[in-house]
Image 1 (spheres, helix red, strand yellow):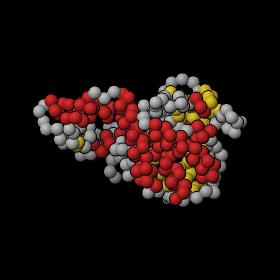
Image 2: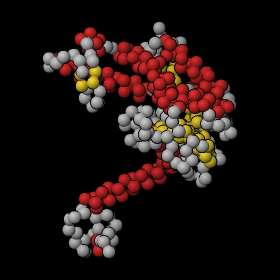
Image 3: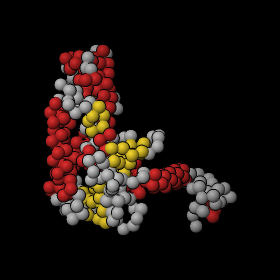
Image 4: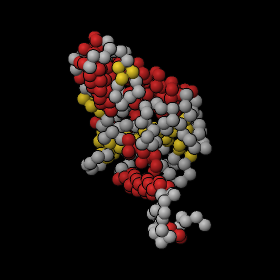
Length: 334
């Protein structure tokens, strides 16, 4: 049966309220700045109208919507306390935030899209395997290292599955995996970065990988580093590799938040959100992007230079490192 709540949020409204504009944050109609990550102009919207989709969870088990609603209610009461600067990174803090992290990952529309792709991929693989006369067990699935035991009945069930069935399976994964995901996150090192003034943005995909490769082998890869903006002045870092790992750390300089805002922008689903005009943030993002591109270019040139080792480079040729200097005045051994 369809849920009475037709406009269903994958990012809770209580969380978005913390990133609302200062003058509306404590009003019945909090508004937030939004900036499309692909194209379009920035705009101000009510938090109830962003990071939401009509009937998003309606084909899931009713228990999904019930659990998400109950969790949001509990966290909404918990959040004002744990986001205070003096609140320690203790077990209670980790338990509450880890549930938010786990559900944010699992309930996101991108996971439904992933579930659709995976179901299609698996169906095609096992159908082809069976059509070639292979036994219906230990079916290898392309692009993964996994092997599945699949029966004829299961193949038929996958073949006739509707999109509603797929959404139902996605809902089951939210129910079944949240606890496991949360526990694995609790066991990792956490650090809180604190800014003296509002500095951090968030997005409609608030759990953010700190590297484009961090989530490539699974969202909970032991080596993946991620962040979650808690408020505009507090940022959670998981698997942080800095010297202050496990502590609450104050930022030393204005602008140090730029690399984090850049990562948040890069991983956003459709929009980034902030309590101030995001065009100011875009200036940060562009500046960091230029630095990243320059670093990549430098590494490519270094790699090209390394490939020339052992090959003859004329003494008056330009150095392969890209310095623009003659080889004899740059990287020639002295």
